[in-house]
Image 1 (cartoon, one colour):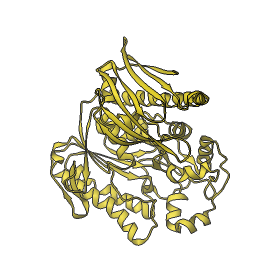
Image 2 (cartoon, helix red, strand yellow; image 1 turned 60 degrees about the horizontal axis):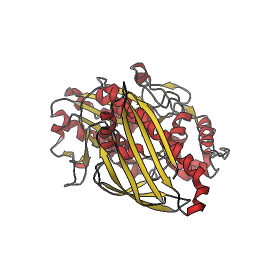
Image 3 (cartoon, rainbow, N blue to C red; image 1 turned 60 degrees about the vertical axis):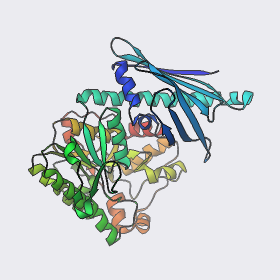
Image 4 (cartoon, rainbow, N blue to C red; image 1 turned 90 degrees about the horizontal axis):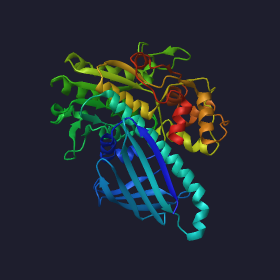
Length: 448
């Protein structure tokens, strides 16, 4: 049977690498973003006999079921999983962690056989190419994640998160869990695991007193709805009232760490003006929301909490963010610049944004931080980069008047046509390391 093997050398001991794999969140962190793999059911962890059922894409819109189990597990040397049912005629994946001085050698060894007998051999080059692409990405992310946790040098924390099931929240949860931290979600449903809260009523249930830090990500979606007066009120209140509720609850507790969010909409439409954390707020609906949103964290500051606020930019992720509505159009060859294409876009790769939240949780830094990559780009350059990433032309312009007709003038002007040239000055000055410094790097990591 064909055998594929991928090896990396890590500075971490086998015990640390094994434990990372054994923790909740590891499967999420090891699934490439371009693979639409979904967990159907899971029984156990890495131990022998543990089972996992997945739904995965095959060709076009068709999906298949993969069912497997672990047949070997020994800390820290490794574990093995085999396919019981799935798209391959046979599949065995050995994960091995071999001690070296210093660190360890990590080996992924896959033994497989294609379906359809001799005809399946025609698929061997495609399967091997897919395995190379997947395991290169997996080893790269593991090395980056381990480095972030190693550099932080802190023990396990108990972190409460609002918006834990959203785009940023789910990625941050998995990242923290694989690093040995415990995540406690704040939930609006009584009886669910976590800490109950009802921001509309200003209510937070018991439990915050037992956590080491709180991350506030919750807020009604901005881009998915038309900007009626009612929805704009919902957007504002979900952020302002939510932050107010949390900050007041935290102010009554012994001070610890509170990381809250804002957005680059805080700056309004500023043309070519260079912006950073010291720049004043702009004008417009989103700027007004951002100003009020950030102000509501003040009670926690006054009570002695170490408070950081991250002004999040346009998130680069295949699971949502700015790529969510754009990828299908660009893959169909229908993408291109919007308006005159000269407006600045302050983007950030999801992994770097997650790493920034982790950095603020585990450092001594406080205050406002721009949650953007170090190199903002103009809309026309963004379109060309995304076109290159999906190997399609990006020549189909979207005139400003057409965007305004489809989205409404205010929403189009503030979300799509506004220009914000934001640089994360404080993070750079304090030594934060961006793994995706350029847009091409971010898109390559997300799209393979």
